[in-house]
Length: 195
Image 1 (tube, helix red, strand yellow):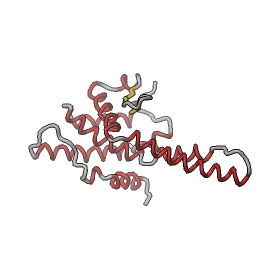
Image 2 (cartoon, rainbow, N blue to C red):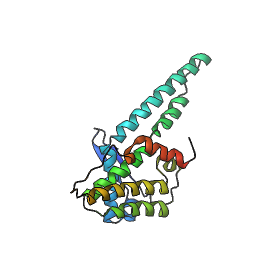
Image 3 (cartoon, rainbow, N blue to C red):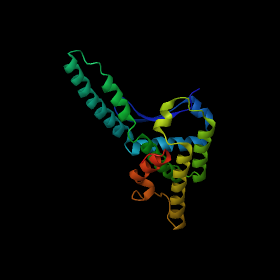
């Protein structure tokens, strides 16, 4: 049974969160709250629309290349480049989107009254117990250790805010290094040895 959850939209563009039966069986109430917080964060951060824009741009460039090839060889365009570049563009920033949703999701989870250490524990358990059988997940989601490191930084950010006497709701400092898209991208690239 598939263990998954994801942010989606209705045909009318209204936000939805889809949770599979497998995920419902895998999680307890606190863990499910963490999943819901993570997926809600995708909606709040507008990741679905940003991802769709990436796909449209990739498909448009691919279509131009397909038509150029068709004109050169005087044949009907095959749409190979359109489909290929659309898929590649879908992955642009996808790990950063996941990392951002992890970060904001932890704030949502904490503000809902859950213990922040349980959030990281769940993601560690998820990484160790669930075999990711499809390659796309590894491409679009941060690796387990990278995800745990980032969530740990956000935990510390929340603990510092609480130690300063801040009361709930506590929301992130979007200017912090933890939240910098460049920092998230650097963490991802650095973990794979890319420049």
